[in-house]
View (cartoon, rainbow, N blue to C red):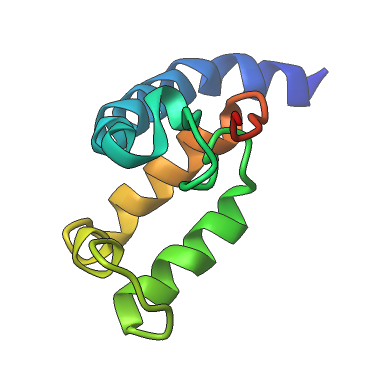
Length: 100
């Protein structure tokens, strides 16, 4: 019973975080498609990606361990807190497959 009450009390804050994450993630649509669902196979889908995995990948781009054309610069443009919001938003979406 206590866990349900805690969830109920936290729901508005979670919704605000997901809304903030959605706003931050809007720039990802340029390459990864609306809501992380790309139109082709060139870019990986972000919708449904586990937040921990996305944060690891973004950290690798930021640190230069993962090469990329624009992702290293994009990842460096966000704070750690913002990246967590983006990762939480995409992980909250149903998983998507890249379209042929």
